[in-house]
Amino acid sequence: MSKRRMERTLNALLPHRELVTVTPYLGGGANGRVYGTPVTLKRAQILDDIKLIRDQYDKETSITAVVYCERSELEDIPIPETRVTIWAGTRDQRDAHVESAGRYEHPEFVDLLEVRLT
Picture 1 (cartoon, rainbow, N blue to C red):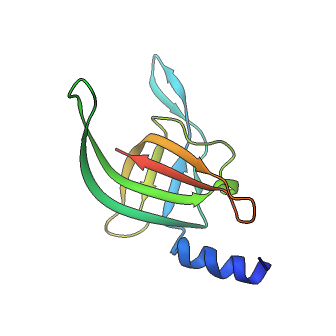
Picture 2 (cartoon, rainbow, N blue to C red):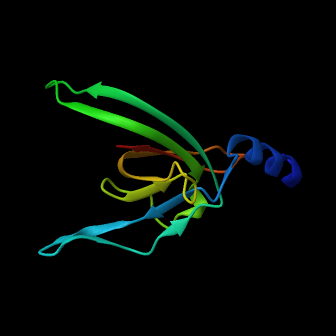
């Protein structure tokens, strides 16, 4: 796949520009949660949706959004409790926390991350 074609495809798949900020969770201590330096993603796909999921013990979790982005934009894959700001700089801006993250590799395309938020 040519570089130009790949860029056009990425622009179509990841249309949201600089609307997602990821602040890595470093751990917790006596003073609460500790976060690292925020990273603003150049492009992403935000699926803002609310779903109720139950586990095998009927514990309920709300998944409020799913964000897709290029793996290369983040130093590490986000771990649970990482803070993510979606729709940054708009009136719909809100903070959420990572529930889970998955990585998708393709031999001829970029690696993508799927980040589920609560």
